[in-house]
Amino acid sequence: MELPKLNFNEEFDFQIKRDKDKFFIYDLVRKSWLLLTPEEWVRQHWVHYFHWIKGRNLSSLILEKKLVLNGTTKRIDLLVTEKTVAKIVVECKAPAIKLTVKTFEQTARYNSILNAEEIILSNGLQHIFAKFLEGNYTFEPFEF
Image (cartoon, rainbow, N blue to C red; front, side, top):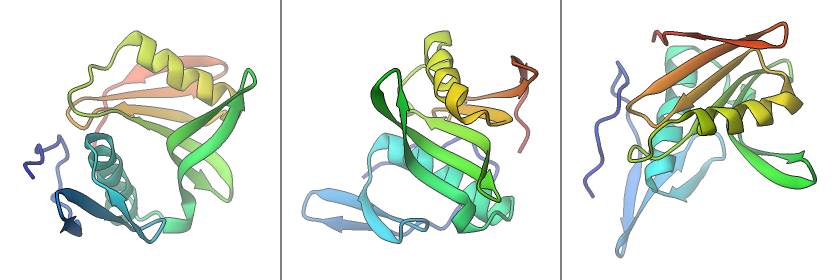
C-alpha cells in the first residue's frame, strides 16, 4: 500500500499490518487495529503528534467523540482535553479532500457545543489553525 507523505515535521513509527487485501494501523488510544483509510492515516499522524511531540497523555486524546448537534449525532475525529475540558478539536479529512470554508464551518458547528479554544482542520497536507476567543475565530499559521 502506497501511503502519501504527509506535511508533518516528524516521522512517526506506525504499526501497520496486512490481512489479505486490507491494511490496518494500530491505534495507541483505543489499543486496537483499525482499517487504514486515508482519513485514518491523517488522524493517526495527529494522535502521534500530540502524544510523542506535544507530550499529551493518551487519556487526554479522545477519538470519534459523539455529540448531538440539532438532533443529529455527529463524531469529532480527535478531541484534545485537559482535565476533561475540551481544548483542541481536530477534524481530519483524507489527503485528496480539499479544505474549504464549508469544511471549517462544519468543524466550527461541532465546536459550538464543545467550546474548545482551538480548531485544527487537516487533510494531512494542509492544516488550518484557528483560535476561538470571545465568540470569534482568528486564523493563524500552524507551527509544529
